[in-house]
Length: 85
Image 1 (tube, rainbow, N blue to C red):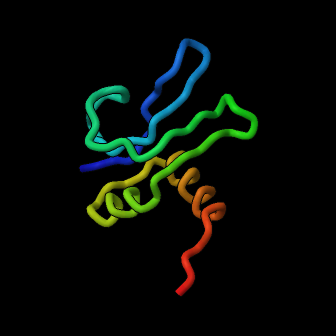
Image 2 (cartoon, rainbow, N blue to C red):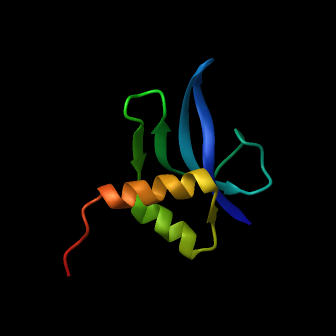
Image 3 (cartoon, helix red, strand yellow):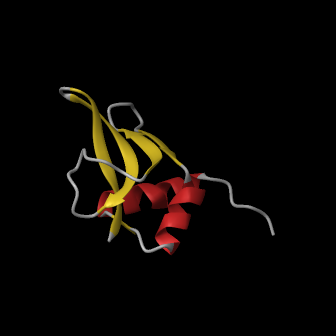
């Protein structure tokens, strides 16, 4: 099963995260299929950059986002401009 989760990067006591698609049972910092964004909580306000198009692609294929990633997606979706029909 696939998961969309955070992968810790950055220095000691200065975390930065990648939002990645990976197998659910692999290690937190192990191999991943695709990098779909970044999250830096040390900035004020927190810096979030997500590729929503690729995230929705993976969710359609059965990937399940973790709770934190789900919240990041919701907050980013509110900020992103909606395409006009």
